[in-house]
Amino acid sequence: MSTLFVQYPWLTELLQGFLGLDLGTFAMFAIGGLLIWLAVAHDYEPMLLFPMGLGAILANIPGSSAVSTEPGAEGFLVTLYHAGIANELFPVLIFIAIGAMCDFTPLMRNPSVMLFACAAQFGIFATAIFAAMSGFDFAHAASIGIIGAADGPTTIYVASRYAQDMLGPLSVAAYCYMSLVPVIQPPVIRAITTKSERKIRMSFSGEVPISKRAQFLFPLMIVMIAGIVAPISVALIGALMFGNLLKVSGVTESLSQAAQNELSNLVTILLGITVGGTMTQETFLTLDVLKILALGAVAFVFDTVGGVLFAKVLNLFRSEDNKINPMIGACGISAFPMSGRVIAKMALKEDNTNYIIQHAIGVNVAGQIASVVAGGLVLALIPALSGM
Amino acid sequence: MASSVESAVLMMCIALPVMFVVIGLFIGCTKALVKMCPADKE
Image (cartoon, rainbow over all chains, first blue to last red; front, side):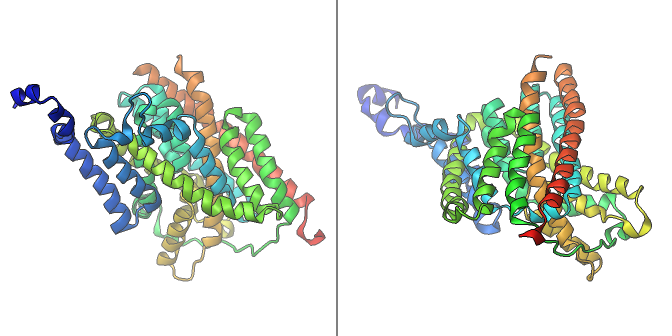
C-alpha cells in the first residue's frame, strides 16, 4: 500500500478523508450525532445543540476544509471563531438579544427576590472548588464553576477568555444541563425540603403597576452599579441592559424586535456552529471532559441547594403567616423561564391550589441579573487570584 | 493543586459576600426608583 502512495503521491491527497479515519473520528461523529439527536428528538436546547452537533461533525472529518488553518485558506469555522468567539463578540451580541426579551417588571415589583438569585449562584463557587480539587488549575476551575450560572453566553464569555481549550465541553455542559433543569432540580428540592415546606402558600401581591420611567431607569441603574463594582462585567451587563432599553424606551420598537428575532437567531446559528467547530477529538476525547460534564451536574445541584437553603434560613426569622415557599429559592438560576415553571409546577403537584408562579418567575428573572454579576466577579477575580 | 483550591475557596469567600452587597444595593436602589417614579403619575 505504501509503495502505491510513493508511486502515486496524488493518491494521498485524494484519499485523505479515508486515510484520516480512526476510532476517535467515529467517536466524535457519535457525539455530534448525539447532540443533534437530543436537539431533534428530545427538544433539548435545539437552537444551540443542533448547530453545535453539526459543527462537531464538520470539525472532525479528516482534512476538513471547515477547520483548515492553512494561511490564506482558513476554514469558515476558524474564521468565525476569530471573528466572534476569540474576541467575545458573539456572547455579547446574544446578551443584547436576551436583554430585549427580558421583562424586569416582576423583579421591580418585589426586588427582595434578588437575594434568592444571589444565593443560587453558590453552585458556581462550590463547583470551582471541586474542579480545583480534581486537578484543574484555578483559571480552568473557575471557568468550569461558571457553568453554575446556568447561562450559556456567560459560560462562553468566561471560557473564551480564560479556558479557550475547554470552550466546546464547557458550552456543551452548560446548555445540556440548562435543558435538564426539569430533571435535576425536582429531586434535589425534594431531598432538602419537607412536604409541608413545599406546600407553603405565599401571598399574592397583585399586579402593582410599574411606571414607564422606572422601567427605563432600572437598566441604567443596574449597569452603573454593576459596572462600578466590577468594570470587567460592563460588556456583559451593558449589552444585556442595552437590549432591555431598546425594549422599554418605547421609541425603538423595530430595533427591539430585530434584537429579539433577527439578531438572536443569526448569532445563535453562528455561535452554535462555531463552538461545535472547536470540539475536535484532541480537545474533546479526554478525561478532563468527563470531569467537566460531572462537575456541570454538581454546579446545578449546588445552585439549587444554595437557593433553597437560603430561603429556609430566611424562614427561621419570619412569622408563621409570612413564610416563603423554599422551592422558589431554586429559581434563582439564569435558566429562564424553565426553572420558574418547573418550581411552579412542583408547588401545584403538592397542592393543586397553590399558585407560586408570580414569585417563581420574579426570582427567575433576578437570576438573569445575578448570574451576570457573578460572571463579572469571577472574571475580575481570576486574574487577581491566579498568581497566588 | 493546593494553591488552586486555596484560590477557589478565596474566590468564594470574596465573591459571595460582594454579591450580596451588590444585590442589596440593587434592591435598595430599585425600591427607591419605584417609589420616586410612581405609575399613577404617568
